[in-house]
Image (tube, rainbow, N blue to C red; front, side, top):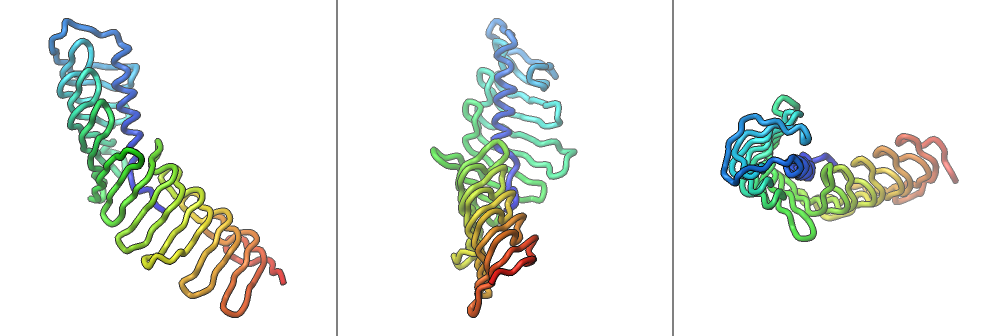
Length: 244
């Protein structure tokens, strides 16, 4: 399973930390709007250009982060509220941007634009979140580095993966089904690959039950065909010991 998205929640966390920093600066004025240009906020590691009120970001503004990323949007009382765009570092491979609607510094909805032209619609829900890409949809939970916890990937060809995720990749117990809905693999995953104990069902009619490592048969296992069952020990996909 590939990692389909830049880290949405990382965006939220970066924005929250950056904007929360201004509350601790003790910058207060007379309540009128003032404009600043490239004002440094060392505690947050960024500079800010735009309007401020009572020492807080207020109105339209731009935050430039030290890592080359940038946030442009509307602020109310120091927190992103309304339309906003978050840009990754354009000089880094795989540059992307997120454009959406924010409320009290949290994403309400929006779209991720990837470097290869793909767009991903993001809609948070009360219990789970939804991502819709060019030929797939994900419904489930997110962590700091992408999909995390349990979720469901469905692809336009009808195939699907349901199970655990960590850092945007299949991880833990899960199952992958082909376009017809037939289970191809059920068992453990790690870093997006078959790993741990599981069962693989070949389209050719044979099956393997046993242990996997890095996507290959590895450890005790058994291959079953229409005519026989072959038990033994495998290493990196090759049988190294046969048991009668």
